[in-house]
Each structure stands twice: as structure tokens, then as C-alpha cells.
Length: 478
Image (cartoon, rainbow, N blue to C red; front, side):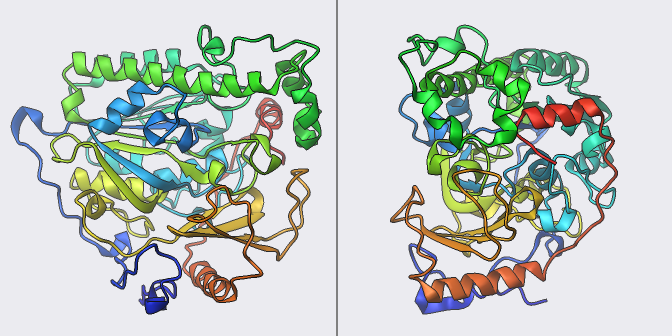
């Protein structure tokens, strides 16, 4: 198989990188025999793995990613002892499709889960199945109904799975996780923890709801929320759940502050988990991956309180890893990486072969500081509406369907967008009509990627009326 991408093959044109790179790309993970990372022997050998997904968490809302106001000391603590990936790109801007990619190392076009109403097929092997097959005790806890096993089928491989009762807070989620670790932490384990506090409706508990706001959010003189109301999708503003959340609110800054307070709340609860792991003697024997399924638009492109589209606020996610004994602390990786890379990376750490067909790559060469071929990240939108290719410099978006879901951002089938992220990080100037050669290469690369898909069958999702109604209340339509 020829793995040479036309983007890599541009050679001297150097259209996509800040510096020229001409190395051949690394083969796909299913053609690679993992080389184990050297780990300390004896009592300090790795024992467990914890993967944490913070639903709807933007990368740029962590202080370790440069936010000047929001307090995230626990996330920063993890980064100081591990590896922070500056440009991690999610495979989807929707919860179930993105988690399916994280847990299987497959793109959406491989597992074919494009909405929160669909389930992963049994042919896709999950990280939990791989770890369980190697003798690890497995634990999962989720906080959205559509991630429950009967809906998403992401329970594959988990011996213990704590289902959602509809958006459980981070505090009780950590409590249940620690209860399980108290009983199972002496044996090899894998735990997946899903936090949902940062998703709409942003509703952090006191005092976090006032951390970043000290005004009167119901002051009738304030009109900022009313001014943007017409920019919100009607399936959100017309829904009773959404209306109850914002009933009487007049200040959009209060809404922003709730998101920010939720970020700090989750950070504090994560810090409590770290402290308890340290007390149990597990912190130095447990690999930790912290990431998000997608981000959130908070006014960019006139998109508010949702993750519609594939602009940076929605697909640029945090990715912080901690691998005890690997000898790499406080490292920052600036290369483009993807959510599909998480599974091959953690499996290499534990010296476990990557399942055949996985499309992610191990990030250990980048962690060690090796120069690697430039990555072209692939992301897709729910419902197959949009597709994006993202490099270190450019973002190419193709609109696949004509849909008027978001008032400020209607999609027209065949329309293309191009942004130079180095010169225009806020994606305000569309260069699609100005950069013919760049567009030509991106089109060719998209055709190549479309031809390299597994196209697996999806599973059968058991959807109750309650789950569908909750999804609608959260801004998802079917």
C-alpha cells in the first residue's frame, strides 16, 4: 500500500508547514509492531490506565493552554508532570462519534457513527476490550444517556459500567470512581471517566457559579442575551429545557461565566482524584490521559453555546498525558495530533499490540522529540454535513449538504472554506478563492482519504423517548 500523501509529496512547495519536511510518513498502526517504552521494574511498574474525557472542553480555556483568567491548577499539574499536546484535533464535534473514535482509533468514515443516535458496531474493537483481553479490570462511568451501552455500544469490554442517570456532576462521578478503585486498584486496571459539567446547560455548583461573575444576571437594563438570541438555533431556543435554563437571564456574560466556572469545578474534582491516587500509592503507577470529545463555540462566527461547525473552538481539544517512568515530564508537543492517536499511544506504553485496522499513530516518537512527517488531521460533522482537513498551517472545510441548522452559518453543498491558521488563527478570512494551488492539493488529499476507509456497519441503538428528548434539549436534532 502506498502511504505517501499528496500533501507530503508537495516537497519544495512547503504549502502546509511552517518549515519544510520531506520525510516519508509513518505507516498506519496496524502495520507496526509496537516497541515498548522502557519502564522501571518492580513495584513502580505501570499498573493502571485512566482515560478522562471532559465533554465540550475547549483547549484554550485551560490556563496551561494560555488562558489568562480561568483557573485550572489540577490540569496544569498533570501537564507539568507529563506531556501537553498543543494542537490536538478531535475527529468530530459531537459526543458519541468522537468517543467512538477515541475508543477505537478509527475515523468516523471507518466506524460510521455520525450522530448521538447511533451505536458503534461490534466489529470495531475498543480500548476496553483490548485491555480486558490482557487481564485488566475495566471500569467506565458516563454522564449522558446517549453514551450508555444500550445506546452507544461503547460499553464493550467494560466489566463495570456506571450508566448515566442524566448528567451526573463531577463530584459524584469521582466518588464512584474512587469507590471502585478502593476495591480494584491493587490489580491492573483501566478506567474511563466521562465528565459532562461543561456541556450546556452550563450549571456549576456554588461557589463556582460565581467565580467569574459578580454582577446581576437578571438586570432588565442588560440586553446582551436578547441581542444574540436570534443567532441560536430554533431547536434550542424553542425547547422548554433550554428556556428554563435561561429564564429571566439578561446578561450573556453570565452564561459565559457559567461555562468558565464549570471548567474550574471539573478541574478541582480532577485534582481530588489525583490527590486520592497519590494517597493510595497509585499515582506513580497509573498512566493518565486527559482530553475532550470536542469543544464549544462561545460567540466565534456568531455561534453561541453549541458545537456546530468545525472551526477551532469546536475541534481543537486539550490532550494531556502522564506516563510514569517514561522519563518525559513537562514536555510540550506542537505537532498536529488527533484523538485517534490516543489508543495506539497508551497501548505502546503497556507493550500491547494495536488492533489491526486502527488508523491512529503512536505519539511516542513526538514525545521523545523526534521529527515526524506533518500530520493532516481529518474531522467530520454530525450528520455528514461537513468535513475538514487540518494541518499545522491550514484548515480546509468542505460543506457536504445544504442545511440551515445554524442561523449565522448556513451550509451549501459543495461550498469550500480555507483558512491560514498562522496568519488568521480566528478563521475570519476565507482564502478558498485566493489559494488555487492549496485548494487543489486539499481536494486531492480528501479524495485519497475517502478511498482509505473501513466503512464498518453501525450497531443497533436502543433509544427511549426520554433519551431523544434529552438530546433535543441539549441542542441535538434527529
